[in-house]
Length: 397
Ligand code: NI
Image (cartoon, rainbow, N blue to C red; front, top):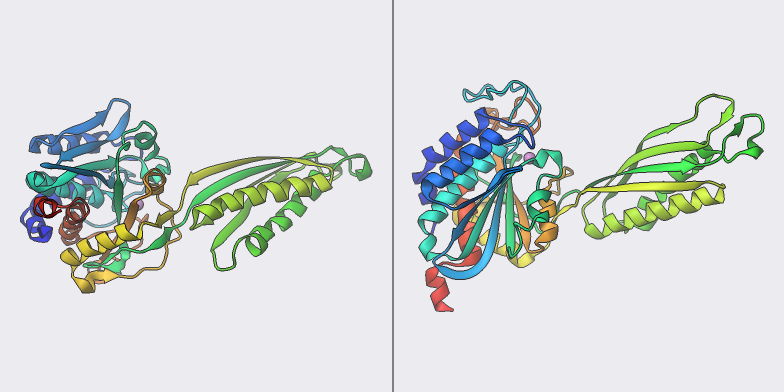
């Protein structure tokens, strides 16, 4: 089956959906109108939909005509607190809220894919779950569905993001690290206060904090492999009340970024060990609050990546397959990837300088051509068929 022609036939359905979603942009956790629209469109087609009384987003479930594996396709649906200046005639009607990260496109493309897959469901082997996910921009939006078991039994997952630095008509299916993790930490050093003229009677938290910050530089320079990117930054420090008092508390806040799950563990362990021992040497103690916000996005299942490239060739042609460097941003699809190891995330090219579509995401002038969407919808469906197999292939086995 080639889904590109089928997607072209429903282009107006996809674009009308996109325009509605774009103009009704809603902030994370507040996607009520968005969810209502998606549920209504899916139900109009007769597709079963799971909704949540205490959460936004929804999951459409398409069971194929033959048994098989279960695949999750994911689109995020939330917008950003930005006053839109894109100039499009379907701009947001909600003041100060704008789809400036392309999530309107993701949702519209997945809605299109739902229609394409529903129409050919009798030929599909297995089940496709289509997750319209809330609150990606809040870092934790995907947790709800994972933690409550809605993704249990899913064998593989795929997510997609519009990518303005890649030309429209191209797609990137990258092996290995794709997007960075994002963690933060609060490190509190506890000492003993004293008069500034008799520091020997106290334990100086500022001196200990200074030593800890310098020692933390060795996490990157001496703990991690030199060929692995890792960032450890202390971006905030607070301590002391007056020039002549030895401070008994120093609080530091920082962030850690990396592309590999193993290095995330390494960074946390190293920070804890170095900070604790350095503090101890200076007569102080520490408390470390380490918050794992988003894991890295790593396309580790090489066979699944190859399946995606096969589907991508069918939709975009051989010349449409692009190579991209890893991105430094983060993405909460990574939490789904931790739950479902056989998963991948792809970048859909939407760059088109001539038409003003090369502006980076999270910008008030961010724009995506409507004409980029049919191929994206087709790819969601094509990948589902490539992964699950259709009736003819099923019978051959
Ligand atoms: Ni985004």
